Image (cartoon, rainbow, N blue to C red; front, side, top):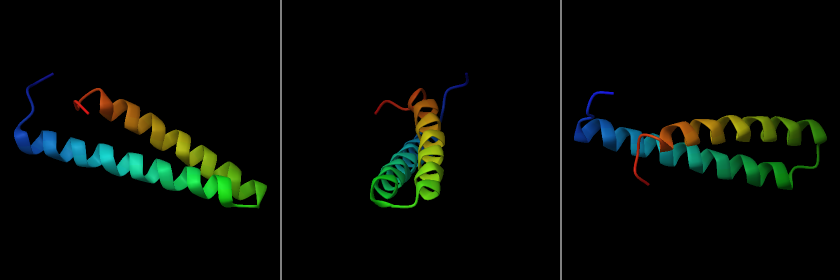
Length: 62
């Protein structure tokens, strides 16, 4: 993989933080929602954001 510029690293870190913020929001929604369908949707979306966050973590040193 080519070396990343400082700006590219900054953007990756920001994307990583955004994914984690969305993950926390979805986990909160999943635990506070009463509708099982809504809980399932939140759980699925949280898993997708967790996978994306894990993928980005390979490129940033956080």
